[in-house]
Length: 213
Image 1 (tube, rainbow, N blue to C red):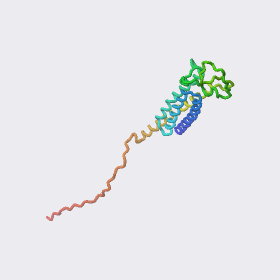
Image 2: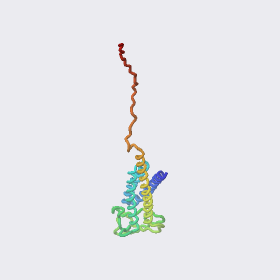
Image 3: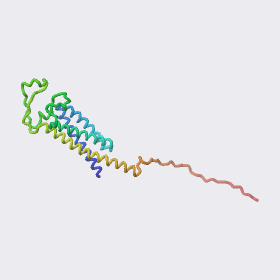
Image 4: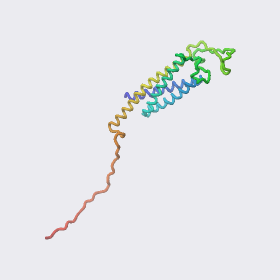
């Protein structure tokens, strides 16, 4: 019962991860955040493999999924540090998330709840010609905190997924070991039914000569 419950919970967690990361992927595409887009894409593939491994009882797939979750947590911690400007990181000047290809920021910067965008004219000389120079005001929640909330949710789901993935792998391994111990086909060679002879045995008669003397 516990194994089935853990396996079902892991399937549910994988489903939640897919829903949340697909939602995040949409907004990262809208904000041209290329590094998160790439990380999200890899995460989607690994979660699908982990889901497949859980359904099909493949411990290697689940183990790979668990290892990836460690890297995924590390990435989301970095994103949180980036938007909170921990250390020398700066969300205003660093273009790490766009691979220094563009000056785009998070989609939530201009489209957050209550945000009002005002174009500034004339634009400064340093502003690129294909970019608008704007000011954003009136936001109920600053965009960096929305991004931090997204990453925090991913960390929580990843930690839960890691715990249940380890539990399911342990249960599958123990079940396989138990099967081998009681005489599974992997431990003992399977012998098919022996063919029986269909020849019918006939009685033999021998004539013994009698001595009249």
